[in-house]
Length: 342
Image 1 (tube, rainbow, N blue to C red):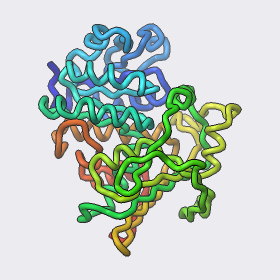
Image 2 (spheres, rainbow, N blue to C red):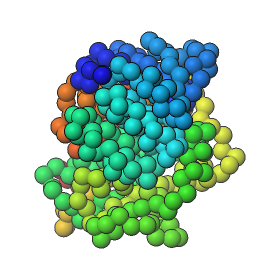
Image 3 (cartoon, rainbow, N blue to C red):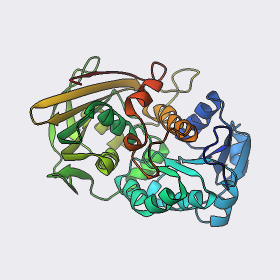
Image 4 (cartoon, helix red, strand yellow):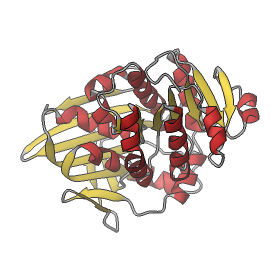
């Protein structure tokens, strides 16, 4: 059984040889946390020079291999998509190991399934299970949670995402092919299929992006926010530049722009929360959505292992953490943000 509240215990990263997994391993090492790198091929992990105290081999088709891989760890970070294929097996093995579970899915259905399947058992075991603890999903939830303040319920949440480019990883390509279900929004207080054709409008982002044409494009943040916040409407919009890039099969994968390994991609996420006639806004700016996912999920793991989780079970990050404190922990190295109306 793992020591689930030990900051010095090892953290397993499943999918450690993937694009995001490598960033996660590097960030855990930077924080001085012990890691176990887990993948389908230990030889490939070793050949890649993986940064970890131990390398273990496991696959979702072999439950015993997952049990061996997660033996003695305090937390598991699942970076292997499509999560519709991996999350259930990895989370089930994590529960058997008595460890906390995190993944970085952008897939709405996967996050919803993790909530529904694991909440009761994780809560009973005193564990925290947080799906979608990445750029798409948990990040927007933290921004919303940071500015809602004392509002128990709101009328409208709008999320605008602007990327100066989107060079998708192979994992993102595979997930897009696998994730064919119609996306959901919150309309009239209920999860509902997004209207088709997708709505197009202008969003006046702050500089350096400025006014952008955006397309309604909900990701896992809809599932995550709706998990713990009551809002009559929740919608997400992605700028056309990013939308075109990710849907163009000729767009190459991300390439490092310097010795950090980060790409040159810049992002901005803006959130508007409205209650009656009052609005609150927050804008966040950073670099490389895949690399940024690493400090997001690693900060979540570190806070949980430090005993800072406010609740247990399968939860949204805004319910588990003090959202403003969490975001401040990422500045200025990974994030800058500004808010108004609070």
